[in-house]
Structure formats: structure tokens, C-alpha cells
Image 1: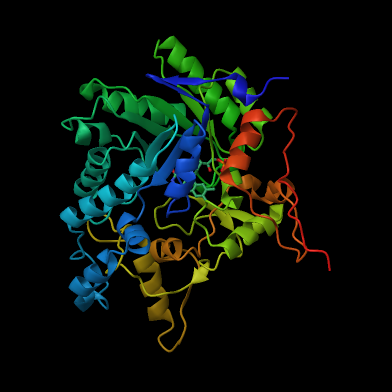
Image 2: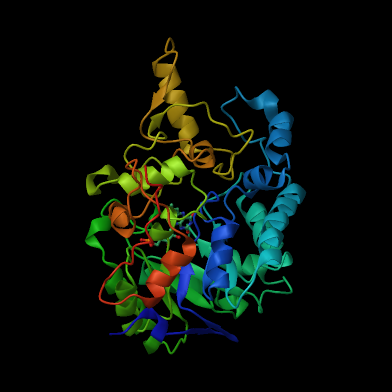
Length: 421
Ligand SMILES: Cc1cc2nc3c(=O)[nH]c(=O)nc-3n(C[C@H](O)[C@H](O)[C@H](O)COP(=O)(O)O)c2cc1C
């Protein structure tokens, strides 16, 4: 019986265990989780979503407080076009976050950063360039370009001294998106070093419409694999979304994948950044507790637990403190939805907004419980504690289970000894 450990991913001079832990914003894929993946010989991701906010929590900075102080005068104004990020501070925060992870790195694996184009930050090009360049400056091993088409991202980076030496990968959900990317970045004479093919069962934002259920990861992977062969492009393909056991992973490796990207099973680990009570919500969830909805102001469908506190919450937009989803003109779909509800219910003490959510604030506060389709199977990966809660796992346990298991088996953790009464 084959196991994932029978394969290795040769990425340049690196021989890797073919396991990549996917980026999970905002700080759900912590540096602790990424460091474990790297220590065990695979690839871990930190996320570049809302890094100044994450830095405040982790490194005792006060980027959010000072931004809010600067723009406080604008809080009641629905026009947010003045709320700009200071590019110098953005660079500083990104470098701090990346350096912190890279300095602690042990083992043969790599640490990448997941970078979402959809975080337009009221100046899409300028802020994206700073985020990408600062991650490279601070020594990140690679960047995975996510959420958005990133058609101009290679060009933004081409003058950087590490443009050709750092690993640069993209996430796509269709052959068409890949073809577009390759065509648009042809001028930089640089191909991606890897392609993550993310199917409809993934967590976070989906690269599909609300008809996501019509699509299937294996079909898209095969289509992309065949096209790369016809074009004689030797780029590693990494399937993601719904790969729940080591045997699922082996099936993709047998189709020619170079590695697999995984996330959901790592949300039940100690190293994952979700608060412990939220991890229990993930572990408890049944199949009918999960939905794909359109409340993200990015315009992409997103999968989450139906009992996420973010759903229906009508908090005032917090763009002066955050503002990561403001487009080039200072607009965000949540601001419109919120103002519409305020106008419709002028007397209401508490506003409810059902069609959109203030994603910055809700993700920052771990109130938007985005998750993969198979979150309802997490309970089968661990044991229950005497009080009925679920035992959290170590990232090492989950990583090794993927690496060494066979026959679709999932290894349970060692039982925790309980004191005899
Ligand atoms: C809680 C959670 C948050 C996620 N956040 C992001 C993100 O910020 N950016 C991104 O590109 N993908 C994100 N994803 C997708 C994962 O990186 C990964 O590609 C996918 O979920 C893998 O499928 P699996 O969860 O079924 O293993 C997220 C997934 C989960 C479960």
C-alpha cells in the first residue's frame, strides 16, 4: 500500500515531503504552524492578511491604534477614500512578521507567505507591491499568490533582486485562470515555480461561483496537468481542497501531482491560531452546519460555519482602523450594505446586516468561522475528553498522519490519561 511518504517534491535544490499547509488568514495559519510544517520537511504558510493587526497582537506594536488616531475624524463619513495605509509602516509590519518566522525556522522545509490580491487596501497596486517586496526583503522562502487573478503581480516584483531566486507560486481554480496568468506575465520571462489548483471543497474564499458544487478537483487537476504537458511546461501542480486522508493525497500524487496543499485538518491543532473555543465549534460541526454564502465583500463566495457570529452582525464599518478591503476608490460592499440598513431603520439600536459582513473586523476577531467542506469530519480525527469536548491535536500528529497513513485510515492521538477518582 502506497503512502504519501513514498513521494518527494523536488523544488529546485530542496527535497521536500510533499505536504504544504495552506495559508489561512487572519493568522489562523500562524508562524507556529508554518514552522512545524517546515521542521517536518514540508512547506508551511504564514498569511499576509492584515499583518499590521497581527503584528500588534504578536509583537506589541500599535499600528492599528495609530492609524485609527490619524483617521478618527472620518469615522462617521461613508466616504473612506482618505483612509490610506502608510506604506513605510506596512513594509515594517510585514518584515517584522516574516523575519519572526524565518529566524525561528528549523529543519529542511520551507516557509511561504500567502498573499491575497483581493486585499486592495485603498491603493491596490502600491500596497501589494510593498507587501510582496517586504516579504522578499525579510527573507521569505516563497510567495503564494492567492485570492484574485494577480495578473500584474509578477510585473510588480520584477525589479526585486530576489525575483528569480525566491519561489513564486499561484493559486488557480481553472485552466482558464492559469492560461490568463501565464499569458499576462509572459513579458517578465518567469513562470510560476508551482501551481496550487484549489477545488470547490476548500476553506476561505472560493474561486468559483455559487455553482461550486458542479466542479470537481480531480477533473480540474487533470485538465491543467494535460495542458501543461501539451505546452511542455514543467511546473509542479499541487491540488488543494478536500484532501482529508493520506490516501486521498496519494491518489493525487498518482495523477502526477508534485505535492498537496492541506488546511482543514490543521484547524484542530494547538498551533492553529483560532481560539480554542472556536476550534471546538469546528470539531463539533455536522455537515448541515456548513454553508457557502456571499457575505464576503470581496465578491467571492466563502465557506463558513452557519453559526459564525459574523453572519447578520451589523457593526459599524471599521475602515479607519483596518480598511483592508477598500478598493481603489475607498469603497467596500459592506459600507453600502450597512448604510442601507441604517437608512432603513433610523430608530434601531442594533443594526442587522445579512447580505454582507465587515470581513476585516470579523476575521480579526475570529468571528467569521471560515472552514473547508470536510470540517464535519474533524470529529473523526480525534478523541473526546471526559467533559465532552474534543482533544486538540499537534500539528506534528496531523502532518505525520498524512505522511504515513494508508488505506484511508486516520490515526487517533494517544488517549489523554485522566486522574482516577
Ligand atoms: C480556516 C481557513 C482559512 C483559509 N484562509 C485562506 C486564505 O487566507 N488564503 C488562501 O489563499 N486560502 C485560504 N484557505 C484555503 C487553504 O489555504 C487551502 O488551500 C484549502 O483549504 C485546502 O483544502 P482543505 O481545507 O480541504 O484541506 C483557508 C482555509 C481554511 C480552512
